[in-house]
Length: 278
Image 1 (cartoon, rainbow, N blue to C red):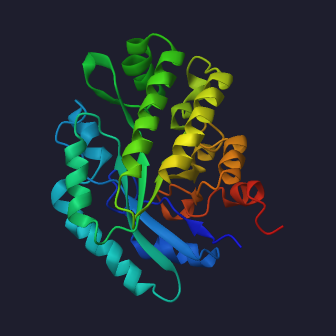
Image 2: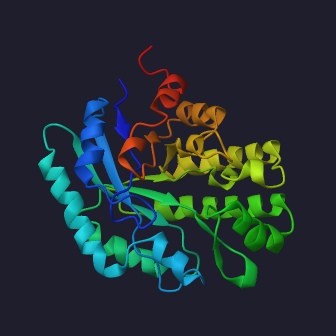
């Protein structure tokens, strides 16, 4: 029987999220019958990781808040013990050129970390600096599409990063559960940008399957794309979810909640694809 588990969620420490206290998220999870709930906030980024200072402040908590976040997550774990298995996690970013920054965070907190969602949010783009792949459609077009020339080139760069992120995640301490975050985030603005060749995406995803199996890295079956008007579908295709399950790759539902009423969003789609309750 599959554990009812929301494995990708955010907190008041997310500067592009909501300031609700964690109990609002966890009480909703309980009301929906969840048995496990992973708190997986964005950790700090290297100073100046993106050139827009205002955007940088929205992306992740400052370094001096990380101890408070970890203490908060652990307090929630204790508070809900016996009712809901709250696990302490982070959504780590794949940071080319700054891997030591991430490694220091993991080294410092590995004794408390139970779950890591490892995500690709950034590609080098306009000006030769890091740009967000999931900020706004116009920003994507100006800072990434114009830089790479075609959507195919951007897609290839994105999946090259995803493959490298899987390898990085595979080397995290063995006691930490790890999964790759929203593997098709590159499709967030699909309807607002030039068409992406779905067959090309399928070929890239098929090549990723053996990497996941070899490293023991799972996938975050992230349904947040269903909330995005320019996407309208989960960030994991149904065929890819089925292929992962057939290979024994861990498939963990993730609401990617940024406010309490996101908790459990899209679970029905995940349950149907996973034959849960049938």
